[in-house]
Image 1 (cartoon, helix red, strand yellow):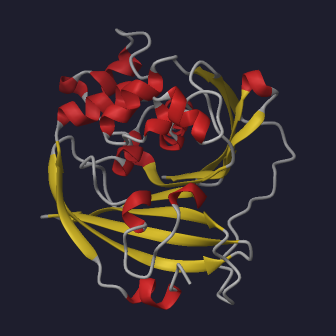
Image 2 (cartoon, helix red, strand yellow):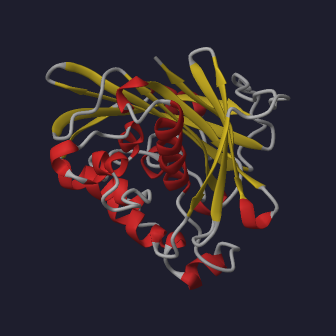
Length: 285
């Protein structure tokens, strides 16, 4: 069997040193569309080094090469066809605010393998700590089609009941035509997001936006709209990738304020509110 669940979970963790500085943070924020308007005081906290705060979703790209979806596919016990792999979901748990400049140790392992019948889900967990202690924990849910049915645990359900009340806030965020080209400079060089010919081979008529770019844009919208721009209030952030986004489209981000958290749904305006992110929650102080 291409996935040996027991071997994958029992494998020794892999560790690597990662580092980042203000230039990496600025580039990441620009890749999310920060800086419009360029001199707006609310945007300068993302784009000017003297006022810089780090959006917590930066944890998904810090080090520009810390293991994620691709890293999980090279772990012992995992041997799958990349064409069957999807990034199914992402969770970031913050242990304290991310510093503007840092050097840390990233330790990654397969935390779980779940059997969904027609597919398997690998949970690739990366724990990051610096000299002062834990910084964040990333969980990437890797969906592998055709690899289920091995009799394993189905895993916990993360599906949320759709809200029946009106959203607390609704915002729209346009995606620039060149946004995927800029975002990929933060470390995700998959040609699916830049090369039209490669995108067609993958079944798309043009390159698609990185799911983690949509993930970051959504968190920025929540922080700016519901948390008064205070990135330090974010405790955790999880989502399920429900559909693709194309550069040039517009995200419609609906938010429901709950006790200590914001529930979010994200859709593509130009495609009749086609789902993009689902089962999305930002927990905050």
